[in-house]
Length: 566
Image (cartoon, rainbow, N blue to C red; front, side, top):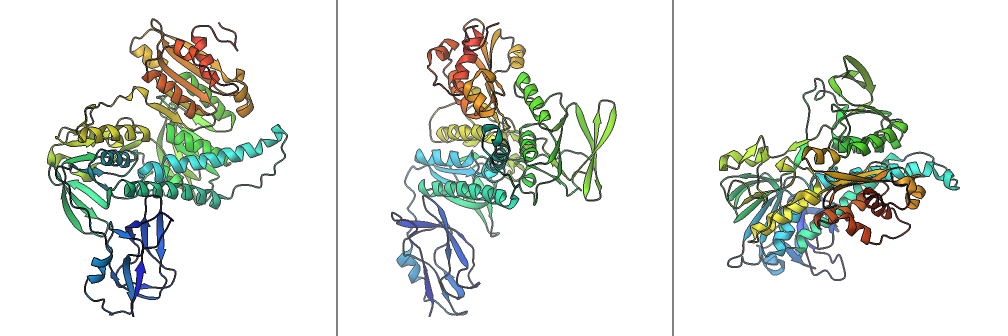
């Protein structure tokens, strides 16, 4: 006799759950303990294991359906056994709510930090939202970008601190790195956050479809689902949040060499490489170079431009370079990789530096020369969506050239940062639901999770000069800040760029402990068009690193207290 598979109660307050994914299919043989299905609630995603042995003879609740606690999900019995009709399904499934008159239907293509935020905001404003994701919710950031990179960096930082404990009078024996546990921690954090996004979709009544979307017309998407089925879906408004993928440069030998990896591959090495050559001195390359150097890898960075992190403040970038070189990282700027070739199990990288070509051998090569938009599958040209080689064009309302179609985040090919995509996602959703708001990137901070951290917002000196703005500078070395001295020996600096006439805050750049957290205050100051007098008037707690922000502002007016004013 067939056994019922029921919706479990996964929490004291749980009343229903959503069938997010069937692991087993009808007709599959199952054993006790086999995972049958993934269930999503507003708090988590859980797996339901089989409590019986036999054949999964009937699935009652299809993917995407809400089922009450103890409602029937499926039946397990003997092969060929028949369950009478579809009556059980009618008794236990929750029927989908009918569409309300006048409710705006919204499609979001892509479930990264731009897409899922846009979906949530649209749902908050009353939209009937469908999110289409071809891979995993959370996008690059949560799965193979920001979050897993920070886990590696945190582990590397902890290792470095443990080795330096003797300076604080604490005797710690460091036996080495358990790389499998580092990778397990990375996966656990990533999975928890992705599960959280799934819960948010459920909580906001957002329908999630796993599949690839392309435009069939200006309001219709052709969706190819993961199971191979196809469906055309029509919407009132569409928000494109298709994201980006690592760019592969046309360097001879790169594509053919298995030791050449992108950032995704560099996050999942089987072991810590003995040597790593990084092609590209941007944020991704520098962060991973920092992490692996801490793990004991011999790291070389090759950057084609004259400095690392070209968009960041040049003075502080030069300081960071010196710090990295002091720690054993070899850095070459104005250097161009000519070719890559296999040398046994290793890889030889031929680099043009000045007028000569030097050869470097490394166990692994990280290709981190940037990212490109991931828009090929969208069929943009067929519906007239304006773009430049895949980089979608929008106005400050995030509107594309086609009415009722919006685009946000990395697929614009401009500022490829998760928090920018999220901010643009909110703007697009609000405009799609009838509001009238504009995106303003003035307060957008840039953060690099090196050691020490590096962050900036607003204008750099170079940009101020380019724009012809008269400015003055205030600097405060963190050697004069007590908390920084305790935390990292006082390495780093805070730098203010202020307007000469009105003393408004134009830019702030920080190299030091907690820089990526401190930059929030500075972004707020720029957004409020604050002057340095506003910074002066704000009492900053002592002892903290943030009091150095006020000191740097004071230094711009030669009023710093804890350093001589020059």
